Image (cartoon, rainbow, N blue to C red; front, side, top):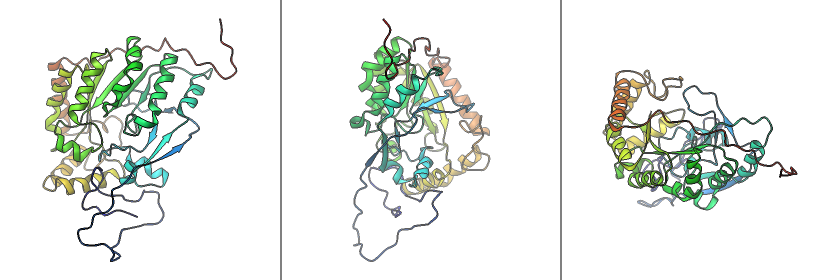
Length: 357
């Protein structure tokens, strides 16, 4: 059943729970006469279902993504970022990309075992594995589930390079692994910072770390020798675009070496979810924001074309690109970072294989 949009659920990002685009039957909430005036709905609880996939490494050949393989320890993300481009993936499970995406989560409990098997295959060719591409590997349930931790343990043991993107300070927990890996040029971390405004962040990405805490994580990682960067993502016109330079300045002061940005993307159901969120929290800005989005996306809410989907097109997109380049040059960001080392990789021993001595 779709939950009503008003008032927005406390502690959650989406204001709606629309059915997935693959569902055959439509459902909608109705007033059955039992609700009392002013009575609030019970809070939405987070549920975690354990699953055991048959493979763990996802591969892609996208020309505008700087990696060809990734691992997603979880499906869904409790951070609840309303703009998350990964929300539509929940529709493949028969669930809503709305509130279901941030409350009905799946943990891949056999990832470490599968990863060992895949890395041990004779034909495996090593390239950095990316964590944090579809859902955050350090979302709140990682504290107990520790799936990301298990992945890093395998990669550290095998000398396999890894890159991480997260909005969580929980990444600091794994410095005992990331620090030594960084010394061997096997690890790089990016913290995603969308805004420095605490109130805006609380509404837009309610269960992610606060902006200050993310910058502290940058400082902590850099202090331990881990190459760390900042992702200003997504940049939202008329809402966060004015913060591009302040975010870069704060991240550089905290020790970030590299930087990147991504323009707001609204694939499939995310467009309606984001529009509803704007109307609930920033009704006076909603039309202006969506109008500018359309101007940067060829008249649409979203652009699927390689080469432009991350940056947009038009005068405003060009200005944003120039601002980013000038700020990076002024602040001394090293955006031509050296590649991670792939020569240290040693495959894990396969079951029944005798060690050599």
